Image (cartoon, rainbow, N blue to C red; front, side, top):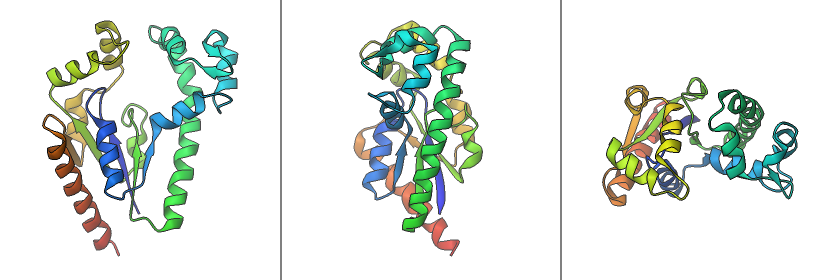
Length: 201
């Protein structure tokens, strides 16, 4: 089984690309969705986060807006939060890959926003980077509810430059065009990955 890391900086279109890979029949682990689940009512991360940041907990769930205000300007607080979340995500990813292996899946995708930043790139066989020109990225990001220039720049500062991600990629999905163009690229990548798995048999 080929384990593929799918990544991309903020507002590059990674989530949409992930849906397209899933539509091609490839199982995808959504790290963001797993974090949402862990932050939800009685989620796996709630108790540990409550001990550090009780003000971020509402109705036994993590209020992401409150938590963001606590950690966004404080690298130490962010590091403490990541020390809670990342091991939980890793466990969920391991369980996902084990399930894929038992099913006999040829390809499994880990959708990980901070693939390079967390060193997770060392744990995958191939890397797909979703990318778009900076102007398109900025426009998309600032159109999101609650996003500001300051918040956008802070998020960017914690992510590897897009140029570096592209350099390290085995495949690149350019989302600057329409969805049809993006979907065609995804289909081509899946075909290439299937050829690799066939050659390994």
